[in-house]
Amino acid sequence: MLLGIQFFICWIFVSLTVALYMQAEKTESTLFNTLTEKEKANILSFPIDYMFMKNEEKLALIERVSKYPGVQDKLLADISYLNGVSGNLMLTEKDNRESGFEINTMAVSTNFFRFMNIPLLTGRPLETQEDLVVDQTAVERQKKDLLGTTLYNNSDGYTICGVCANFIANVYNQSPGFAFLPSDFTYFVGHCYLKCDPERTAEVKALVEKTLKETLPESIHPKVTTLQEDIYEAQAIENKLKGIILFFSIVSLIITLLGVYSAITLDTERRQKEVAIRKVNGAGLKQIIFLFARLYMGLLAGSATIAFPLIYAFMQMWKRTYIVFFNDGILYWAGIFMGITFITTLTVLFRILKIARINPAKVIKNE
Image (cartoon, rainbow, N blue to C red; front, side, top):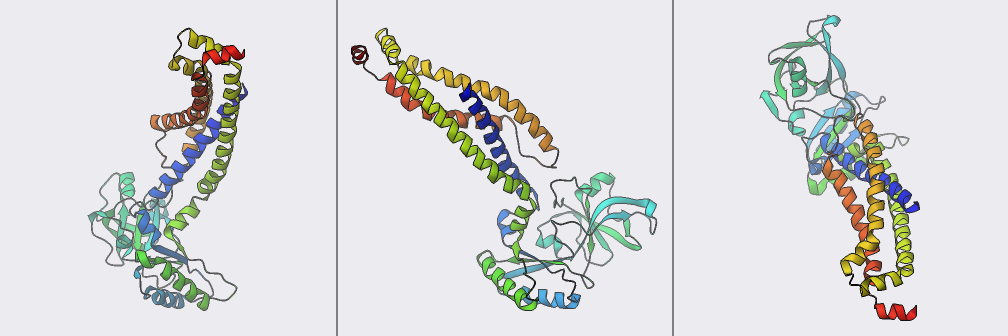
């Protein structure tokens, strides 16, 4: 019974650990999915929303760091793409708030789509201050061809000139779609991204940090990260929790295997005479192995039968907090079961094979 409880706890922690790691990988690959993991690691990100600086000073600073060797391109933004959007409402009629509909609006520069590797599905990219590009989700929600349609951001009108692939910057809430408005950031810039040569990313990062420290007051500690690090930080719950659950998973697995090893050791020593008599009566290696292994097979199957439905029910509730979720199908459950079964088999097999090879005459003589 104690071994069964240990196996039950082990199933819980191991299943949750695997799920957290797979979900963290799923969300990291989904965010800004038009960029590869390597490309995300080579894009530097730093805030520059300092109220004491004039916008002209910010633009001059960005222009300065963008000239460093190893910098391929720069991308200005009013806010970090992982920290929100520029707005969430557009109008179909000028100055008529009643005609508004929900859509994430983002002020972007003309090189935004090239920088983020976002392909245009139809139409053309932003060229003038009256252009507007929407993503595929926005088109699907409106259920009509939006090319040539005019939308209004308060009193400013924009004509939709293109439709791009979906832009995913949040995995917790379903996107109503994105509308990308042109901006030269003359009035406000709050964030900057720098695309770097892969072999010089660390060098450029050090130079940017040095420049910011020299420019900003001593009381301010500038933070320069990569887009990949920003994504990791945005998924802090999964990434921090998976380490904690992994620790408990390893502890519970070690305790369970020690319990199994102790039990099989005591069992084989106690039943030496029984094994000897069975061998005299013609029992082979397969029969001896099954004699001892069936208990642990039953414990594994029985505890999994109780634990897996509980874990499944929890994961169905957990799944509702995401717009994407890893594949928790039959391969997930079978992989966990086979993994724990394999480790348990290695633990008990040594002792079973040892007793299966005993000399019956020697055992009976000792008795």
